[in-house]
Amino acid sequence: MSRPSLGRGERPGSSLTGGTPAVLLALVGALAATFVAAVTVPGTAIAVAGTAALGAGTVHDGRRTRLAGGALLLGAVAYGAYGGLPIPAVLGGAVAALVAIDGAERSVALDAQVPDAATFRLVLQRTGTTLLVATVAAGLGYGAYRVGSGQAPAPAAALLLVGALLSAAALR
Image (tube, rainbow, N blue to C red):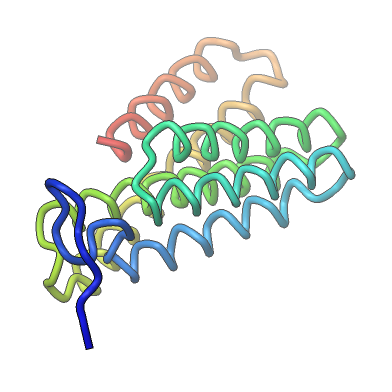
């Protein structure tokens, strides 16, 4: 039995990403965001396209495709907000989309650094950290929304700033 020939500069298994746990966690996050965005037919179509693009970009290591998929997922959640989703559902969908994007990026990065290593615990720890920080940021964002709908815009701005900083720290 002969082995398949590799192209110049390729290594065995380089055409597909090997970080299976991260790919699965990214898919779960993308499906959760799709479920949240599925309040309208256009939102559902955008979310399904985003999930497909994020998955394809992850499996075939296409950075632009992953970024487009992540943008479509976040856009679908935003479209759901425009369609009348309650704020907690929108924030939950945004958290799910961010976890999916981070999982996809983590999967590709791990495959490039340690293609044959068992990375399940590392991926689970990183995803849990991302989920925790994004949830805290979403909670602070919801707090800013609740406070900002009253007569106190200064605390709302402060909470929104803290939420933005935590979001940026989660994606680092």
